[in-house]
Amino acid sequence: TSNLPESKTTIKKVRSTREGVFGRDDWIIAAKKTLIKSGVDQVKVDQIALKIKMSRGSFYHHFSSRADLLTALLDHWQASNNAPILRAIENAINNFPNGVPELIHTWIEEKEFQPAYDSAMRDWARQDKNVAKIVRDVDEQRIEALTRLMQCYGHTGDEAMIRSRIMYFHQVGYYALSTQETREYRLHLMPIYLQILTGK
Image 1: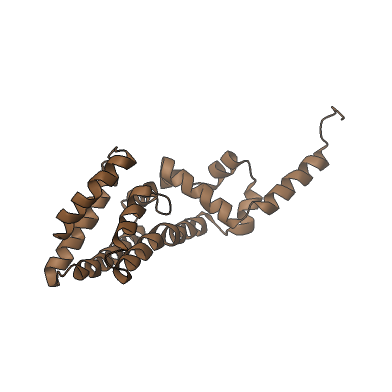
Image 2: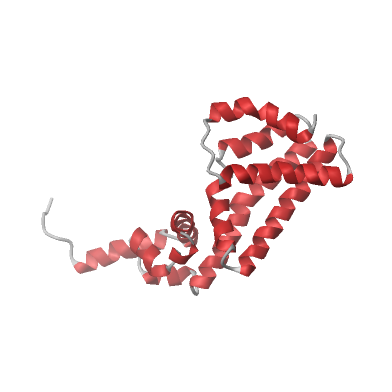
């Protein structure tokens, strides 16, 4: 094997191949990681490109601007972090009561749903009124779905709505306070929380 350094042509060819593989979704995931770790102000094309060792040309092959990336990031959050929660609630309603533990596990396991992604979005929303509206809409979707779940427990009207709010605010509070508990302990507390929150 030759120990000679690669030619500029070879390096360029390797970089081009990698940039062809590194697609739009990869840029969004890189932006997501930056958002969670450092906040929206650090979601900048140059900084992300430097971290992932890609060129600005690769970025502009997939996005027209930073604003375009941020819009895609919002869409990604709704699809990847909101959709799993709504699916789990709908499953709990459609398969009541057997589907309820699966909803709780979605929150506890933190696999499909990432609390840190939600928290990063809430931080972003404090700086941007348009993002704040989207986050509020998502919160309302979740609370509306949980209200229908509370109706399955026999609660109606304002009581069903208030119980759904308490359940939701309780879960958001867990993340906001960065509560540190083992998975086993949370599973131990799950039936107690469920009894208190649902009244059943």
